[in-house]
Amino acid sequence: MTFQRTAPTANYRVLHLLSEGGQWEIGLSDYARGLRLRMGRTGRPPAVLDFCLGGDAKLYSSVLLAVLAKLELVPESSSAAEIDGLFPWAGTKPDLETHLDCLLAPAESVETPNALQRG
Image (tube, rainbow, N blue to C red; front, side):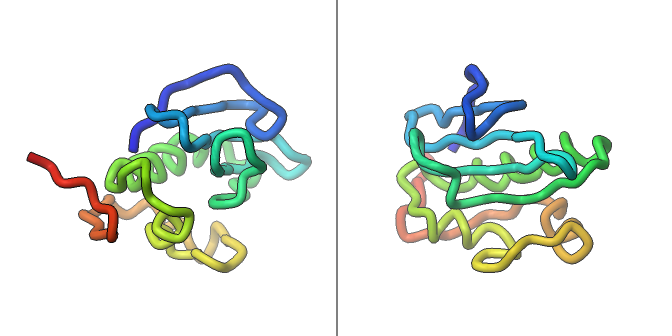
């Protein structure tokens, strides 16, 4: 799944990216304690990723790029559960101190039930 930049929205106030097929949104929003990386179905509140990046601006681009690299491994038709499976904190509240190293690890091939066959 790949994304393209588009105009900010209420849910993605700093950076808004839309998936190529228009099914998913991902981006950054500012909050009192820094930025949040969020993701969800287009036109709905973000419900797949909601990761607090805090106030360390040095992390923002590396975390965003790491997440986008992992998302490239799955087709746009993937379910929220399949996308959650890419990330170490699926089903929990993410914590930078606990999950950052795993998140920034290089993306590896992922097998999902709807895996896109490459030719």
